[in-house]
Length: 192
Image (cartoon, rainbow, N blue to C red; front, side):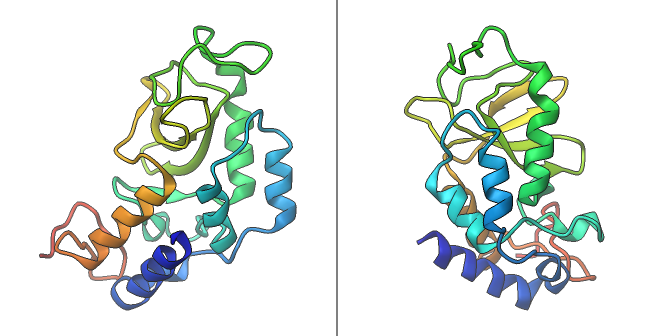
């Protein structure tokens, strides 16, 4: 199902927002995914791995605005960048959540500050925030969390990567579609 949703997103982007479609990278390499998995303390949700088997983020070396294909100006990270961002946050773990043996006092979806070792960044925002997949145990395993340095991590509007991509596909195919004159998504516009 996720691969069909992603194919629909790509087809819509090629038609409606070609500048955004052009910056999507090909599937992530197994080597990069393995390098990432080697530093993570928990298993990843299957839908995240499936998404990376379809694309490896966007080429953020080009125009950053073009790659903001997730609402609220989030740019999907390439797997090597996920690893870099994850490792960069490790000195800033929430001692009320994370334990030295990789357990957590807080369940998936619960707020943490400043960071949690079970959060895997998958998108970066133009304003410095990140969208992370929460791999802590609990009923919300795999949900997405917003993270900002001054706020910590708190629940985002999506319950999974599948939910996120279904929402993007719906927005692109429906009345909430937003594209600027240069063929880039602009989630602040409403071109109903």
